[in-house]
Length: 329
Image (cartoon, rainbow, N blue to C red; front, side, top):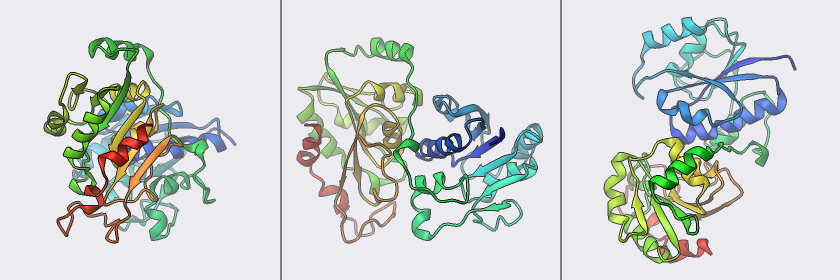
């Protein structure tokens, strides 16, 4: 195939950006000469630079609900004439504006929000397939649907120099195995295994492992509740995404909810132990063969609700720390 310049427009969430690497790998497998740029906010720039398929990151900083029309128009003017194709992974109108305003000839995506003019290379998925995020992404490049083969699974490069810096900074003993806890989930409480369960699991593991708790600054109080001794460090709000990536690369396990950090872990060397509540591992699984999934499959799940409408959160509460502990053996 001739060289193509392609602009990828992912959803601006951590998990979606990691899963979008499946599409990048698909593009490169069919057209190794393709030059792929990706449109992300500045907070994700250093992360996508860990994806070897990416040529460069194009930066657009808008809040999640901000249209930012003039920001998009100005960026579109700057990149006009640079690309042969754009692939828009979100279904929103605003996500399709830059490719349209930049007059990119082929603008691939789904319709969604009445984007009849903005998208001119249409992809259609059933309601069931739409929820299979990575499958949908990997099927975007051509109209030929393809199974989500392991060869398309995300994998982020590590930075050995940064690993040395982090190891020294947090006094990580090379002779002691590391476990990462990622107890948060931006989605809401229906994705969050109770903090008491994380604490109980930590008490079972701390004799044999050094435990690092990762998350955003909003999750710092959760991390504080889990820490019970000197073999645990609460790093919520203290690491960048690339720091988290490198710490995952040198960890034996990462125990997480269905969250962005779960998808990040699946793109590293660590074993992913994932807990599902209101969502389904059939639809957004950790994209790695090195994983264990804990999912009760209650009659009311997956409900995809942020808050349990029954108030019991049994899909999470009934996953016991003892059961998760067995995954570490």
